[in-house]
Length: 453
Image (tube, rainbow, N blue to C red; front, side, top):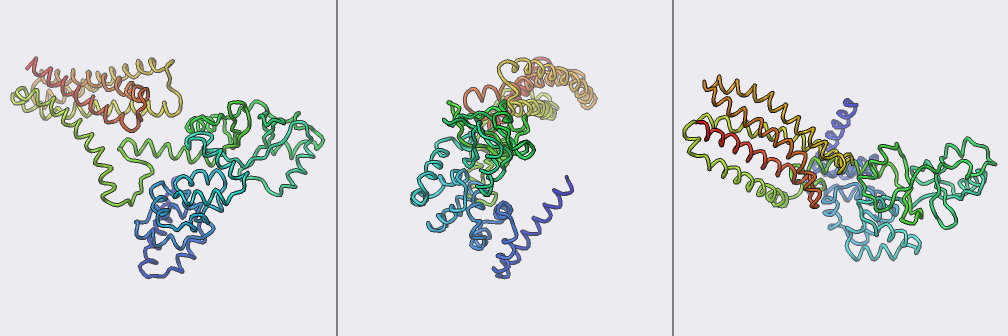
């Protein structure tokens, strides 16, 4: 609910102000009391919202039994900065409360001596489980999976299952299904807890288990996993290897993190930023990163300026051309961005492939044609009346049509081409598109003006 979101934001802002006041008054005992009532994820969000100097002052007062989970929820840059300032024994202690899958996420960022000590502190079985998770890419189903699963056989009764669960005393967090395997640990199906509780105790697992829930291969990309959860309304799902052995499970909380990260990546990449960048990173660090992207944009701007320079003599004849040029480029840029955003989203959701990309291209091209005609008429009338020159109105109208068609085609094809060659469409697509629409717009407008004026 919008109101609830606004209220949460107000509460968070109030909390930041309160922390600042406490630090200014040098009353650390109040920080301890304040943080003790907060969830680790909330503390992580608070730390990310504080300037670096305040964050470092607050960190020693976070609850000792939560520091590992807090580190886990921080963005990469903020986490790395805190890890670098922590002692080895503090880092080892922070990992002791983490589950295997969470430990696999954070351990590669630890210093080598900490990694060795953590591995040595684990029992052989836990160490092997950890290494199995670390063997998969962090953006894959194997990297997301939780090894803490409950497996049962198909040839036992529900009464046996219930006694087994009572004997365990507790269930792994987020458990809604038990996974059914054979003696070789091949995945067979799932048995929902709801069926266990509502069916006769003497019924066999084999008679009740659901077999049409396919396992997710461990090498499947996290983005595709998130799509599966969305389409199938899953809460948990089994992870299997190529031989159909059950490896673990993925839970909805991990998928929510993936969805959030993908959204952050799409938003930040369009500005050439990293979603894991610390908002309060040092000035020179942030300056260096952003300078690279500004440099790329400067090169494309010089290229567009060079095209304009080719028509210097034409522009000198009619100052109105310089006044109207930004309209052509701007209309093309906006139209292209609409198509680019649509295509990048479709690619992220797995809705665009070889079989339908040409139909999408044709559709977007026709949208460009009709939008070009509609707005060309409007702009032609305005420009003609403004400068009392109908010929100028015709020229800018033609340039608008050309640029909007090219923008639509470019917005549809650029992401596909970039992906084919291994580039990130969200990161570089907007720069390439802007360059294309600027150059084509200027060429069309000034070129036609050179011919007819």
